[in-house]
Image: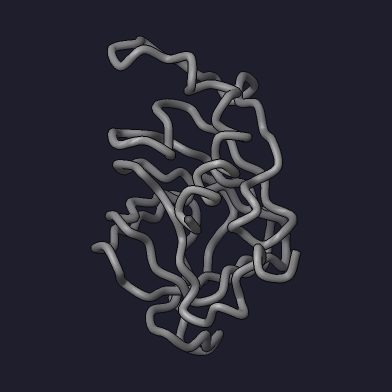
Length: 155
């Protein structure tokens, strides 16, 4: 049931580019072509998202950009599939584990890359506006280590 509600939220921001795409579609985006919308409610408020290719709610390859404001943070969490991320602009402070510790993060400036196996607990802080690109296989989701950190619980 919870997975179904997560995917329903994702559909809201997928429509911009991906839901109309055929599996063999040719897609090109210049930076000014990216259409940002409010990120799904499974993420802390304030982020924006843009689906460039595919559909994160379905099985298969997708490309998603996430733009976060200065001061943004995502508490410790895991994903059901591989998390494959490139920092396009700004910087991320990336940490591993089930407990958020700013002092145990690694600074990842623009151009950095990371990939994590499914179920790997991690967290991230952003001191500046940052754009990340996630290229992986869906369906995509997020599970917070501490359920109280889930923004959907506070709504």
